Image 1 (cartoon, helix red, strand yellow):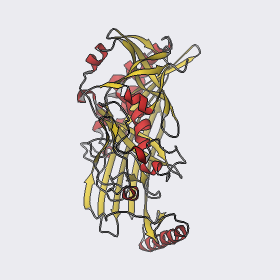
Image 2 (image 1 turned 180 degrees about the horizontal axis):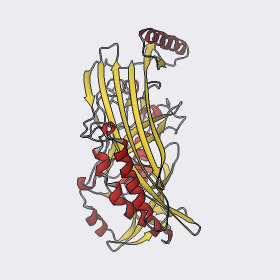
Image 3 (image 1 turned 135 degrees about the vertical axis):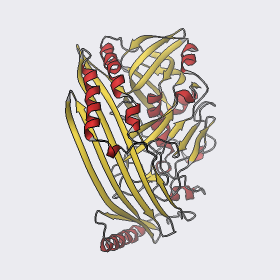
Image 4 (image 1 turned 30 degrees about the horizontal axis):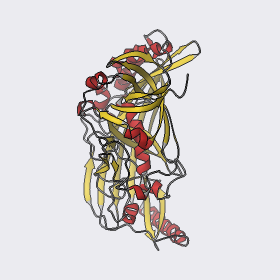
Length: 460
């Protein structure tokens, strides 16, 4: 049984005015049962003893009905009986900060962007979430958690003759978010970065389109975070592999026969699932089955070695769950979700990596993406790109795109920047399941170089 209370506040400023201000609290409980070898789930927003009895009885009734059509009985493996607490460490509780202070910050960033000639739309936003969860099971587990999130970002839109260009900061699609307090919003310095972001959006209007061809590319950490999310994070979800989840975004090319033998990337590619990283958006103490947060190897020296698992899917492999079951609130069943899926840092300094590249393109921050339902064939577009020639950054390009096949692409990775350039980027909008659920996940990445990549498949 899970009792969940979630408080959320979000603010958006657009062209000098408050475009939206949303604040809400939701509270309720969900009961998941196994009866006659089948799952049943029911939930309610009424936290009353009689309602708990009624909802639990309903979950049992659903499970008995489901058992009439089960293919095989549910096996959860060994009991999970952790007793504990977890709280996100924060320096400043974001809900304790006066609304006026956040509004002043967003308006200042907005004003700094609009001060740049050519900017038509300026937008800045901030978001805060506090989720309190209590979990208990009949095996003896009792866990209390408080997860606090803070996020913020800005976007500048420039419009020219038959062209629209955008730049974002510190990440695209609204904001960067992490498990942290208000200190995260102050650390990213949106006001200080606003003029640069706006000037780059205007410069893109007159920049040439990124040329087509097969070349070397260097991806910045934010673009690489989405690359990891789509081409590694989703295909390692074991419920997709086993066909238990496919409707929202397909299954996976990483079938069971590939575990431990399949070459996913070059020998320098090491990928982990780590729910213990301080500040990561996929960081917590325990998942929604009561399993403790863990660090799990996914790709070791280029070889695929691990999935994201639940208790049920792990038991099918004769393993213990690595703690990735999470639900989007009290009225949804837990499903396998990414935690922080990370490309481990390499040894290169960024300037040395550029200097070591004779001919290529540097691409930064996602603008568009597309990937097939096996997570193999993908295409990404970035907000900005620069030519690399003889070890130096040169011409600015717009409308840069690249495409590839997942294992071939990662096999071409020959250099990854070191921990000084490594950051855990938050993705607050990962969709999965029916009815749809949104998960908050993270990706630790540093800039990396890839050889023989098709670039410029879309001309703008």
